[in-house]
Length: 80
Image (cartoon, rainbow, N blue to C red; front, side, top):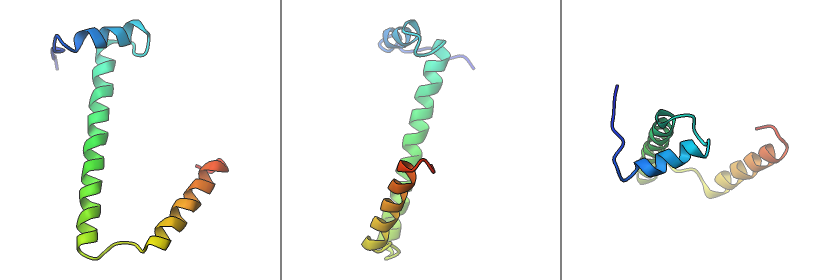
């Protein structure tokens, strides 16, 4: 696939490559697409969460905080 980088974005792409943040223009574009994909995945997860809340399928607040605290302890101890 061949694509053109819009002229207003080209200086930024070139700066990223010149600064050795990326090896090529293609790597910059791939990183941007990965970020877009992550954003869309997050949007879908948030929508699914609101749908669950609307259907009274939420998790009790205390359980959420317990899980968050467990996760924080795991991260701090290097388990994750």
